[in-house]
Amino acid sequence: MAMIVPEVKLASKASEDVDVSNQVWEDISPWAWRNGIYTPESATNCMGKLFGHVMGLMETLTFAQGTENTTIIEVGCGTAELFGAITQKCKFKSLIGVEISQNMVKCAYEVHPHLSEVSDCKVVQGNAVDLMDVIKDTKLTVAPNPIVCILMNTYGILPDHVRALSLAQMWLTIADGGTLVLGCWNKEELRTGFAEFYSKNPQLCGECTEDDFNYEAGTFNNARTGYTSQWWDEESMRRDLQAAAPFDVTIKFIRHGVGIFALGKRSPSQ
Image (cartoon, rainbow, N blue to C red; front, side):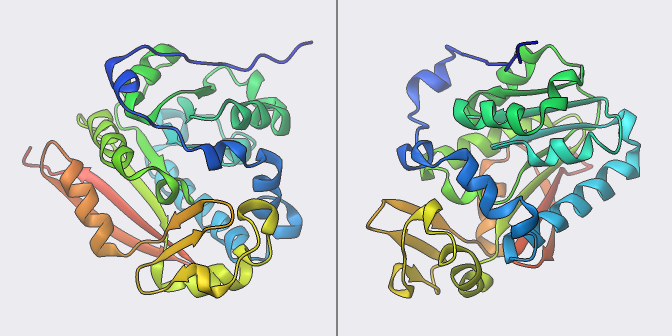
């Protein structure tokens, strides 16, 4: 049986007017990216451990409201490792993964073929700046209190001008109830990231040295390949989240390993 890979192609004003592309990211092999973080061999590096923390956090959030009553929408889901794992454990109201790279979407269904058999789960190609339209086009039922997340390093590699647009769409998606989860790599742990991840995985971002890292600013800029990444602190994450919100919000921070997570909700008074 041929495997069906869902694809969403939009012609909305946002995706027409905003350049959301990142050619360096498009050139990275989905398989190389996955092998650096999500395989048994990488489970003990800082990023493999972080994914374990991500799983624990998402399970805690979903179990609190009952998985069958939960929708998870992941922006920049890559090869859908979160969905690949949690669908083996529980049934959800719906799961929607949105990913700009069709190569990543294709790889997701190749790595996790069971996802194509889960009727309430779709991983689709789409733009984060059009998130609400992409969700609507999947025709899946979204639970009243969805969890809308952007995890691992997705936010850190988004073009600057796309971040605010993406966050605004995420806030609107949970406007009537739900939780926004922004998971970033912690600026204070960038030295660990260099030692345990970047320097050990040149197939991802290219050969690098400590000269490519600005630990104070939390940036990695590899001039040889053009790959850039931003690591974050609470102040900068809160600033971005509040600036993009069309209403008052409350934000709570959690740290796990090299990760820092912001959990945002619309303020009860709104």
